[in-house]
Length: 386
Image (cartoon, rainbow, N blue to C red; front, side, top):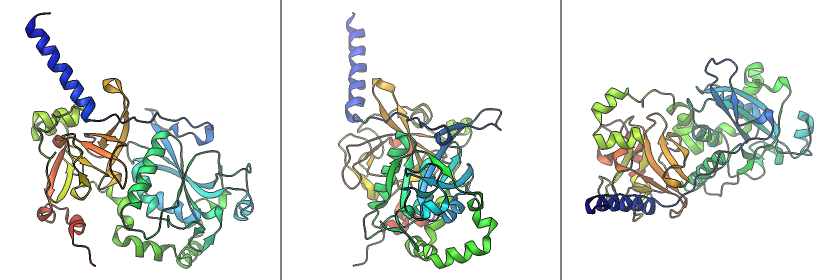
């Protein structure tokens, strides 16, 4: 090999080695397969000429009448079914489950289009409908059959649920520990027909029950104006991905390579790796909020690193098998921008390291949040009262 060629090859190897070492060795979990056909995580829609791929999510949040109604109007949700799961009795009845002798919980099964609404967004809605600190039931309904749980259908759903729970627990919103179980999904049994869409079929009784249950009082006290945020933020249309021509015109070549072609910028030679100012980071393409300076830390890798997303519903995670390893890629929901990767070697409270590319982000300092339309995040930087 000639000297010049050897030097060029040597530099390429060094570059690859730097990416592998500095980006860490996170391993993405492989997609699991549900065993029961009736409870398969991924299903084909018979009505779609493109045979779109739908997925399922199962949540237990106490009375299934209340939890079902929270998801039915979300774009991308195709069906919400009330039922029973998690126990040992086959084909249980409502009376059997409510007696607490079957091991089942009241739950809902959601069929959704992941291209329209992400699993993370559904998790955000779920948390805003329950008391995750109650080990004995939910509100007026007591017993194991009314306790909260997330039933995952794949390793990816399990990871997202665990990360979402950890982030919520570390948020300081609750005084007690979160006790919501995260369990592998099993057989799901559809409840009796009169339970389906109960909030519509028996609206007067449903409203009376819900009002007296204490659920809404608790949720309003805990979440305030944020209670409905998760169900509306993904569908408001505020953050959208432009066409490719507009993206090319807007972005620098490096920004385009990173966000649209899943590239990686140089370590220690990017805009935000050492940025210590207070503010938030948004998607360079869509503008959707992604990370906060309050969760940023020095990882020593030369890329901006965070312990958690600012809005978990604005990011998705995908298995990445490039560069001869398994990693977990992080992308934005509406911009569909490649952002970076997440690794399980971060500091407390989440133990995660979101290793992002500066080229995929735009930083908005706290003094500019109001005028740029992100005023709701100003509260993050207010001094905490003693």
